[in-house]
Image 1 (cartoon, rainbow, N blue to C red):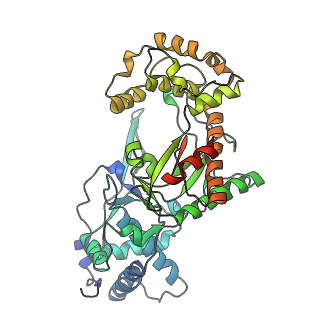
Image 2: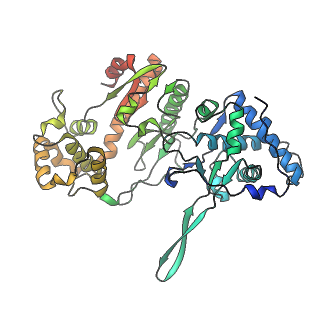
Length: 437
């Protein structure tokens, strides 16, 4: 196999390579260009520096695009190529992959990114001219109201690797099957997310907006240090048949003691997989076990109101004649609104149908609610607790995160969060269960 090269086209040839047919797949499966990909192997570094950057420099010389040599800016520019190309190649893998990534081209949209607007735009121009990437145009959307037309945020431009870039990577030994060995995302430094109160109620409830500026108190420093330590530890473990890059921890209602769940960052992560697929994962060449907290929120709520649940039996099985999944859905809705549900939301009906093949509406709430209240009288006090869901998530998340930290610090055992449980190597299942209990 010969040495891979990327040749520079003559001036004017770039326009022939601009419009390429995008990959197949739904647009909502396109991935955001976070520019986190880094070249982790010699082959990946050679692809970026020896072949792609050299071709870019040659093209700039042909076209006179850059009159001065890059001196202090050489490193940041090459890093921009590395992060951009890595994102493009990694976007070709995974379930429902379209191969496309997107990012606004507005200058301010790069304020929080690890690459600058100027470096990205120069890299974009050169890579398109070299026929290494292709781009679709952005689309502005319009809304009519009161007899006038108003513009609103549209669809950001999409970018994807051309056959030429894919072939060049393949010559370097980088394929869709092994690209994650060569390009891996760097660990995030901002791992805490603080959200404001959720606007709307009931079916119209939305996630609260992110609060960007908050005081870095000792509590915040400790919470951040815990997640950074977990991320660094897990980055050194071998996880197979399930994808995990890093965690962030999200708190709600403008408070560091509301919510607090760990979320695996990135598309197609293991938290989005079915239980059946999760149980096929490996950690450090060992099959996994999944340890669940049974009826987590229901148990925590009863303890909170001073009416602890007794016995080891699944509490949802106390409700005679009611399907367990239906009873659990009822409690999720009740906790979400701090009162018993008055109707089944349409999204809940659709998801239940998809998951079970059954129509949730056959369970009439006027008949179901009295049965659940009879089994769990503590729900009579529910309306005293506003946004109880955030308190219950905090209790649950502290148990899960605390167990993960103990497993890591005292036993050097990796674990993965499932919000109400953990995934651990099979041989460590009993240890994890003991600590979590």
